[in-house]
Length: 216
Length: 120
Image (tube, rainbow over the protein chains, first blue to last red):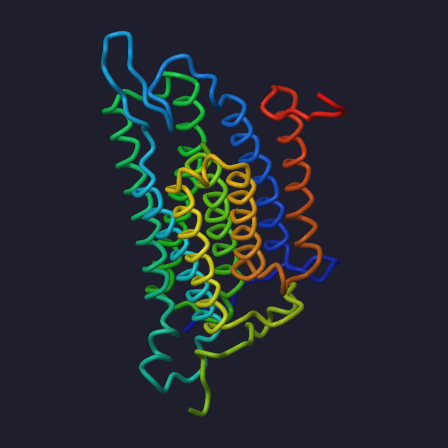
């Protein structure tokens, strides 16, 4: 049985936690736009390769292909978008926990554990794609200190990956609570706050995917 | 079916007090949003593989518009900003606008964006 969550309402009538998460997301916008601006300012100013979209031959005669792998990143983008769908379904399942579930479809859509697991797994899959990408870049000769592209790219996408990691840990903690005592409508606000963070991580990636990967 | 949570368009009992002015959408809206996001992403990646389109002047504006569209859709429907209290919109769009304008100013300052006025 769900324990009632403590709500702290402000003079606006709004819950303080929800105001806090939106203020936090606003400040995170500033962080990520500064990182994206830095990437764009350094774009095209690297003196040595590897480069994101252009081939390059080093002084030692070694040939480098464009380093960004668009098919792999497109797949990871799709995975993150689908994780957002799973997250809204997890929130809806928690909000509607007490409603009767008569059909198989009702039971599937009403399972908060299923959708929280799905979101966390999709988030972990995205991190797996990122680990693969980072590893392959290092093997191809691009590190944090190789050139301006490497420095700004790893900083931007690394910060985003750290946010996804924090989100996966947050989701797993919600899952632990769900297994321990069950999440119900009284917990909907706490799940909503986690969902807002998760969707924010998703929208940041939407911008990064276009600005870093697709625009040459 | 007496009750269909699949199409349930209601929120938690105390959600109004938490700042939700209108009811959240249900599964029927969420999956449509997911399809739209997927189609836009496929469109973006498809455009990337057409050299003539990449070389054209519409490529970058098109990608920025599509990316912005995905951004707005997720914020409005998945983050429920369309349905929530106006204060949340202010808390989100205020810093976003300040940061975006600062970022654009920096791009002009460092010569990545150039404004051309007058002939030549």
